[in-house]
Image 1 (spheres, rainbow, N blue to C red):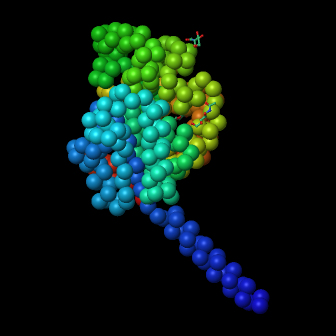
Image 2 (cartoon, rainbow, N blue to C red):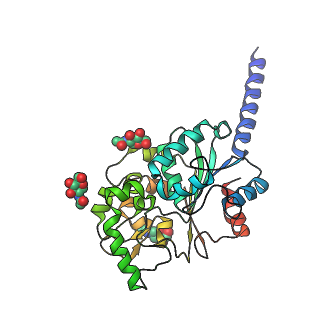
Image 3 (cartoon, rainbow, N blue to C red):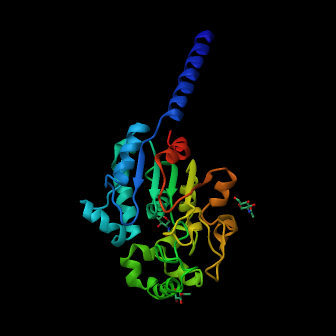
Length: 300
Ligand SMILES: *[C@@H]1O[C@H](CO)[C@@H](O)[C@H](O)[C@H]1NC(C)=O
Ligand SMILES: *[C@@H]1O[C@H](CO)[C@@H](O)[C@H](O)[C@H]1NC(C)=O
Ligand SMILES: *[C@@H]1O[C@H](CO)[C@@H](O)[C@H](O)[C@H]1NC(C)=O
């Protein structure tokens, strides 16, 4: 009798162990979220990335499309509020049975902060590793390809736009206004940004954002070192202008958001969950070789 019990126990242990190994080594599907001016499926951009990942990693890859056509998807990048986009995507991914056991997620440009918003808000999906390529986690202050530090015209544009960005109209209708971050007036940003200030817990701490973000296994942020689209480029690593001016920048670990651990990044960093990667080149300019070498181990 005792021997039989022992045998059963051993069998159970072997079964459990082998199963655990399977679960751990099983490759997860991948979800992609495109950036502004792009869509789910153009063959020269995300459509190509999808094919590349399907053939080289060999998993189900879903490229998020907002709306029912490529044209709507393109427009959504400018005109559908991120809060609404995240709700739509949350419902859609939750329904997709192929994603029920979890997935890895890759966000391109603004798709990076939208996916982070999804991780924080959508507790019905399970994201293992979140990779953001050229994301704007602390927002932007400046126009694409218009360097405010070296051009006076660009600096004037920036000041002009600044007046409009926080009006209700812009916050409701222009996606990019929802992550416009004026370092000269942090209070106004915190008060008025209807998306970024919320997911960054700037107004108050939403504990479920913290809890959900910490569930990630790895949060990988890729910064493009010659980026002329994202200003300041440090936003890609969650750094930003030091409050009160728009020239000097600080790293994530020098920001108030990190020091006070407002969204859990300090804890995550101490647990080695945050990965900072850099890529030489301009916004989203990476090669397949770079992608293989640097990102495949977070997708296998
Ligand atoms: C906190 O976030 C959750 C998930 O998005 C949301 O349901 C809840 O309403 C938020 N809480 C507050 C106080 O805004
Ligand atoms: C923040 O919003 C409140 C209420 O809308 C307003 O009374 C206050 O003046 C705003 N503060 C700033 C700095 O914009
Ligand atoms: C912040 O991070 C950088 C590099 O990741 C490191 O060299 C520096 O010591 C850190 N600073 C603090 C205050 O922890």
